[in-house]
Length: 134
Image 1 (tube, rainbow, N blue to C red):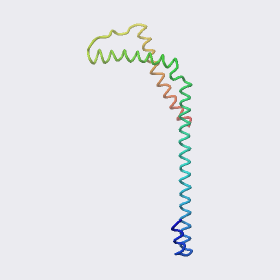
Image 2: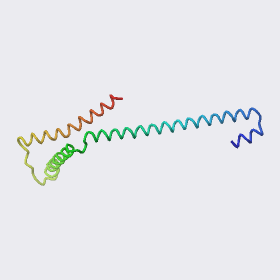
Image 3: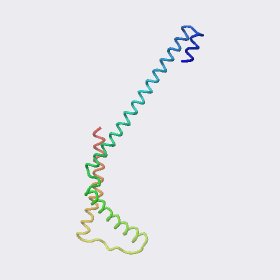
Image 4: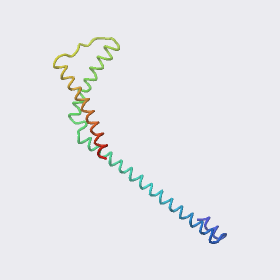
C-alpha cells in the first residue's frame, strides 16, 4: 500500500499497471491460502468424526463388557501358565510343571485358540472392510 502511493507519484500508467498486477497476485495468493486453510480444517474435522465413529463401534462391540473381561481373565491365566513353563522352568531351570492332560488340555487349547484367533479374525475383517468399503 505504501509502495503504491509512493510509486504512483513517481511513475505513470506503466508503474500503476505493474502495481495493480502485483496487488491482484497477492490477493489471489491470499485466497488460495485461505482455501488451503479451509481444506485443512475440513480434513481435521473429518478425522475427528472418524475417530468418534470408531469409538462408538468399539463401545457397541463391548470391548470391555462382560465378554471382554472373561477373555482378559482367560488370557491372563494362559499368559501366567506359559510364562511359568517357559521362563521359570525352561529358561531359569527352577522347577518343573506337569503337562496338562485330557479334557483340561483340550479345553485350555480351545480357549487360547478362541482368544487369539477371534482377535485376528476381527482385525483382518475390519481391515478388509475398510479397504473394500472405500
